[in-house]
Length: 430
Image (cartoon, rainbow, N blue to C red; front, side, top):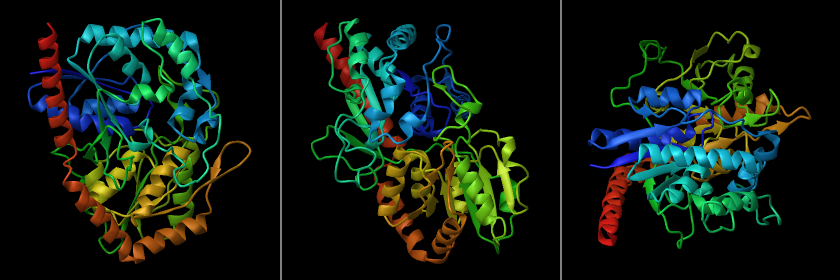
């Protein structure tokens, strides 16, 4: 048996833990020793729900860099997205030391990471084999979030000079970009070549969609008792206000940020309140902000519901364009109307729309950073997706093509094999 440590960028939403938890749960069920590390509140709830160990912060939290999320919400690619987060040398030094200690104390045979540069650097410092589990747009071989635009801007921001300076203090050679550290000794891509295309020469393996749902998960009785004569629309907003729940590792500069997904909630209320539909609103273990007020009579709120089951129960899924949300809809064969709230999510949304399984409504932004959507346009697209069976047919086609990759099973098999290969190599060198 092997010992695995799962790490991820500690944003307070469910996208990254939702892709790693199913792998970790399966490896634990096979008898391996497994721990995860994400101190943010919503991911911690998901990890606990899966019955997995979430390691405590191994040292007193350092003050995170404070930045305005306006700096990243229009980022062209993952390198530009990370630039404001990893440009403070003192923070990089402190966090690298924390992750090195985390890995050394837990002493895993393999680190399995999703988009946490500190963990990827620390694994190499500690000489622990590294597997990375990424969506295509986070991989170094990606052409970026704005993949449909022909001209890539020059001189995009990067924190590589300062990150390389910290890496050099541990004897690690420099890399041209920060995201080059994300290419593990083994790199697994969530999704399929259709949903997450990468160049043929990228050294990666596809594992299919990864979405967490307990095998015993069931929808509550109140959902099953909804009037079947009316379609169910599932609205998943993700984190409505990122500044509402601070995390130990990420700081924000203002109570309103362009990454907030409250625009999804506001738009749904404005457009769907008088439609003959049931609207089920979930927020991913987040509380509804008080500013939302009382929900319309045809709305039902729950902080969290099992995603695949909820998507399967729904006629249409409305979400913010997160990769996990996109995968959930496609796994279930459920079409979507997507309101992407940052550039990364718009890239995901356009990939789903390109399969024929979704419509997109891109928000506009006012001077105060709040996003807005034309409620009439959004409602018209929801009605179109409800009415036209081609959207569901496309979603079901993608779901069927993705099944052959087997998701968590394929990922767990590959990680087990990688652990055994690494152990054999180490034995051969000793």
